[in-house]
Image (cartoon, rainbow, N blue to C red):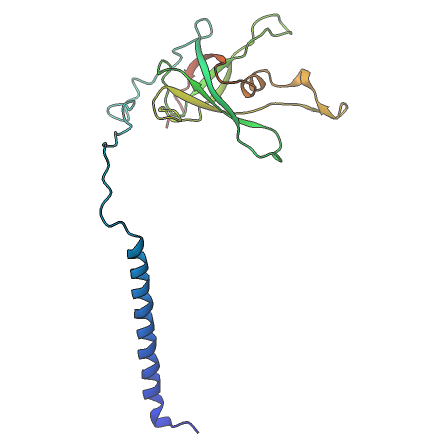
Length: 200
């Protein structure tokens, strides 16, 4: 039989034991965290420089936004730093991350586009290929934060021919395939930067 008179006392003992257990667990967690904490504040030998040397002053001033600095008749020549596939082997299609060196001579703002003129002649009209626009994928500081590079993310354009049951090379994207096939050191003929509507 249960002693009803002792029931409140038993409940109080249980509450005390639970509280004691919680305190013990909390103390153990604090001790564990303290074991991994550094004994002193880390010291840095050099100060971290703010990456703001390409910012407008004030920040909302768009009077210095570069637009169409380089045109079709007087384009800029950039150099490929790297071209890397950024999708998995099972992905449908291929997308590449392409870093281009402009040595700080081709500044741009986030939200602008670069024009790329692929090499070669258009077989349909016998004239050089026309410019293709690609949204710039990096900030104005580039992937290396030096302000001397910029990046494009380009999907290789191909056309699957149901009759051939293969990609039709005659219908592939001229410029996207040129960019995705580039190697470090290759030259890229460029125009722009274009656009002032989508600035970020």
